[in-house]
Image (cartoon, rainbow, N blue to C red; front, top):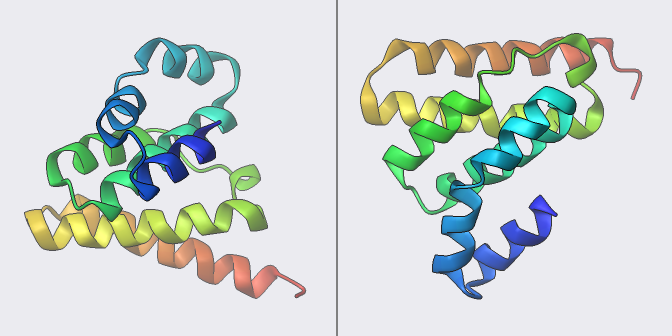
Length: 124
């Protein structure tokens, strides 16, 4: 569901309604955060990614703070989620360049370190 909405927004079909709906689904988010944190993290990532693509600084900052609210546990560093970690790092470094807030630089470096550790431990 999050991916289809992301694709819909990125190709420009009904951008305003889709984007607003993506940003304001707080009831769904709270339900997922309590019941299924992995799905909540995926939904939060999709919203953050859309804001990053469109370079919406204020929205992106708000969504990135929500996304990074979930502390990454070892189970979150699977191969599939490594893509999210990579883009989370890109978002963090971009927010750091725009705002100068060092917390974003730290988050970017954490993402970089996590990916380095994952590649060292991977048998691929």
